[in-house]
Image (cartoon, rainbow, N blue to C red; front, top):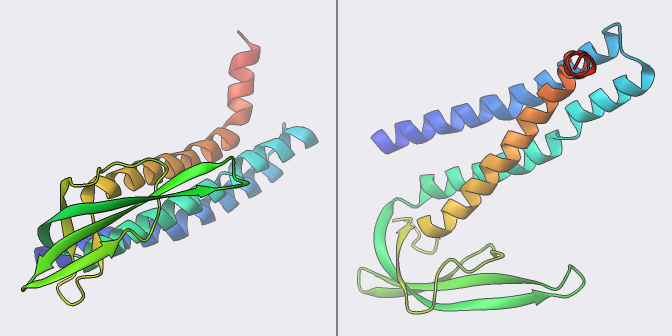
Length: 183
């Protein structure tokens, strides 16, 4: 019950940010356009600084939403064994490797083999390693592994931080220009 309340709060915070921050950035862009004292090029640059980072914010928010959904659905902890870490090579994208770990665990006498639905640029687990895995009691093939989710959470925080910080820099650019020009 407490977990459901915490998850509902987290989703409400997520929804608030997902709606209010982009709207705030649009308001910032309007302020920048209407504010006197900025030249045409400065206005374009500052509006770009305010709106372009919303792409990073949207990607970070999407990642955070996926993480919240995984945590909502997968609530039962078990220990799983990493049975393989499949590596794929993406030709044409800088020849990057992507790792897809596969896990094995047992629920009520049934052995499940599940593969990570998303790939990672680095393998955070090794074959034969035992890791914590949370699965959904209704459908044990719905799962998440905290070790892997930690990496996605860091990326989500970084992307959202870029999406929040840069629009503020664009909004306060005239003040920054004044301070730096007087130095």
